[in-house]
Length: 168
Image (cartoon, rainbow, N blue to C red; front, side, top):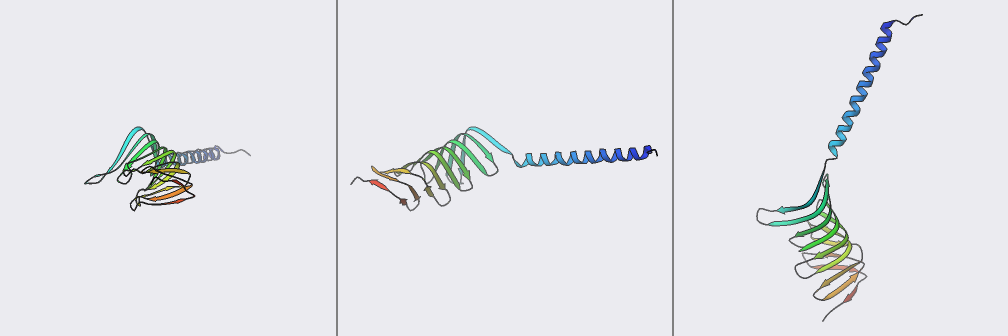
C-alpha cells in the first residue's frame, strides 16, 4: 500500500500554509503592542502651559518619561499661579494631579513653606494634600503634624496631630 505523491504534497502544502499564517498573526501582535507603548524620554527640559493672556504653569525636570497620559519626572521644580515653587526628587503627573515623593518642598508667595516626604497637589481645585509627617512655616510660626490639606484659594489649612510654635 503505497502513499501517492499527491497526498504527500497536499499535506506538505497545508503544513507550510499553517506555519506561514501563524507566523504572520504573531508578528502583527508584536507590532500592535509596540505601537501602544510609545514613550518619550527627555533630559533637562521645561514644560510651559500658557493661556492666551498669561503663563499658567511651568515644570522643570532633569529627567522624565512620558507613557500614555502619565509623566514621570525626576528632580522637579513646578510653579503655577497658586504656588511659587514646588520641588521634589520624583513627581508623577496624571491629569490634574501631581504626586510628589522624596524631599518635597512647597513655597508660596505669601511666605508659607512646607517640607515633607510625600504630597499630592490637585491643580484644578488648588488643594495640597500631605499624607505624611510635615513641617510647615509661615511668618516665623512653625507647625508640625502627621498630615494636612491646604486649600490654597481660601487659605484654609486642616491638619491632624499638630504641634505648633507661634510667635505673638
